[in-house]
Amino acid sequence: MKRVLALVLIVAFICILGTIYAGEKNFQYVGASKCKMCHKSEKSGNQYGLWMERKHSKAYATLATAESKEVAQKAGVTGDPQKAKECLVCHVTAFEASDAQKAETLTLEEGVSCEACHGPGSEYKGMKVMKGIYAKTMKGADYGLIAPSEEVCVKCHNTKSPTYQKFEYAKAVKIVSHPVPKK
Image (cartoon, rainbow, N blue to C red; front, side, top):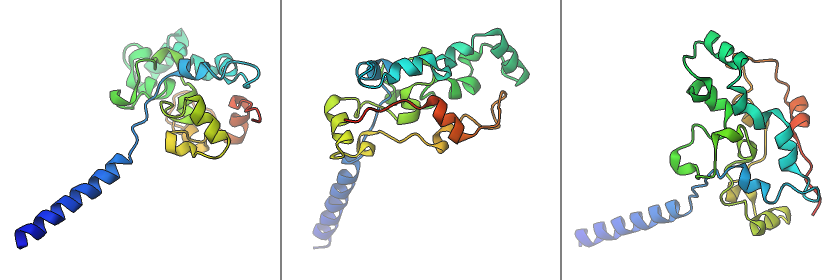
């Protein structure tokens, strides 16, 4: 009888764990090229085009400049800033994410892209999901979509940066924000 009860408890525990883990999502960073498909037209707000004009899209390329190499050296970074963890952690999207969280379409060259602010897009990038989120019939968080926030920004825009300048979220968000057309 005790063995049967122990077996029932073990099976119940495994079922509960299976339910918990089945609900977990493993969102992947897919890269700006996947966002571009729907966010490049004027009708959609041209978010991709606006991002391309701004510093975040050039964050990785900036590391190749003579000025960045000098800043890195002064900060104690040895070697190429485009290969240094200390630099890449803030100059590319998802640098510290596991390889399993990075799709092959995510590249260093895109710098700080859409998913740095909005979360990994593998599940929310589809038209059906985005329409559901806009219609409020689906929750963005269930698909990996996060709202940009000061907390997200200050992970990089902080005094640890060797080029830190006073960061004022309210002003900064106006510079990087982009239109979201009414659906």
